[in-house]
Image (cartoon, rainbow, N blue to C red; front, side, top):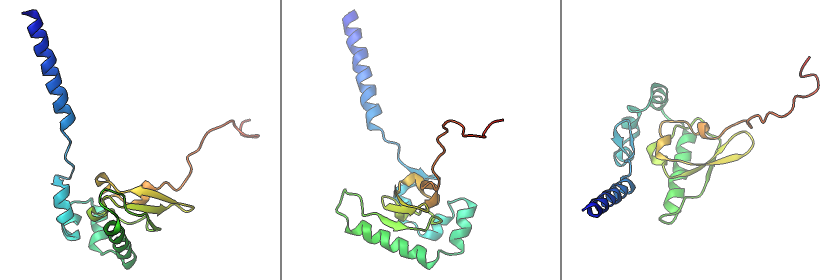
Length: 149
């Protein structure tokens, strides 16, 4: 009788483990699923983003931003299924990440080199520059001469 109860608990634990492994959190941006975001126009998407990004999108993206989008579309179309697209280099750190850019790889210029940034759904509404640091973080060593009294 006791052995039977023990196997039942082990069985339950195994079922819970299977459930944990299977459930993926479906991505949504402000309550809208990724599939719906990809179908949206820029005007519909701008209603979801914070006010600074919304203002920028309302005033219209410039020609160079459209050129970047065109290059990203081309790179995504040319890559075989299941592989990452070719890196598209850009100086446009002020480009807002749109749903269309997800899965692309962008080389964002930091003033010296191009940092490859793989665009993920969580990045939508942010600027490209946020993902390419422009300075080298300080590694504090010993203080130099004259640093103290």
